[in-house]
Length: 110
Image (cartoon, rainbow, N blue to C red; front, side, top):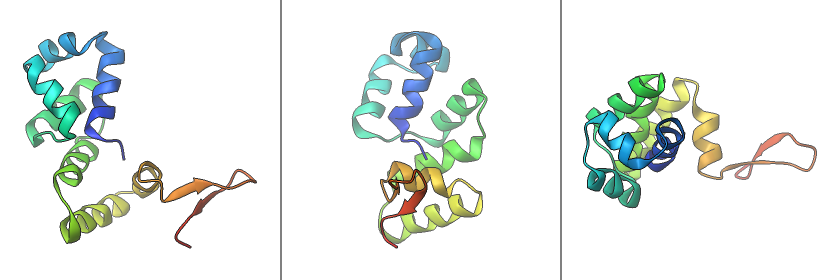
């Protein structure tokens, strides 16, 4: 699962700048700077990003909720992501899965 700022990196690649991204999403440049620095975004912003990038809204909503959560709540969001089939990307971004010498992905917890 990507972080909020990683989604903004994708947007920046598509629009050319954070300023243009802000205009497309009808956000202030300051709002984007705050999202990037705090790694937090609202559900409404997550939906705007998903629609603009053509991604599944659920993926962005879960990423936003996970970024705002901790403890048991974050674990519940991780379980929901796993059920949706995006667990590998969540674990890769959390550095829990890592490529082995042979190139296969292995869990460092196993």
